[in-house]
Length: 93
Image 1 (cartoon, helix red, strand yellow):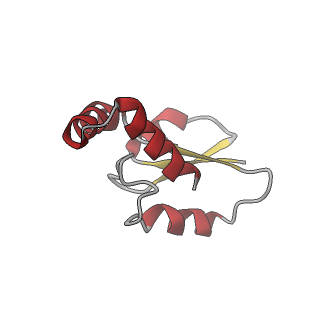
Image 2 (tube, helix red, strand yellow):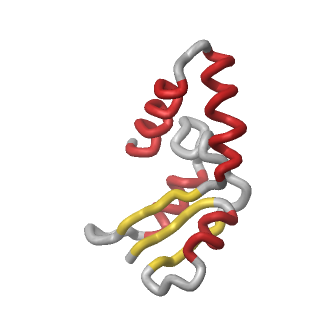
């Protein structure tokens, strides 16, 4: 089973695809997912009871990329690649 978790984009993107179950968890942002302050995603994942053959997709809107990645890089004096690498590491953890 494939589980898509995220904002309204998770539902809209996978609507009508029988193999995917979508979970709208409110106005989450990609920046918050996987952060130390994020209690929402771990709670949702724990409730899913994922098996070894299940797949989890986190899905947030493109506005998160447009409005968060560039400004975070600029504000913190880091490269865009460094900001995205940090996000990827948090997601995998």
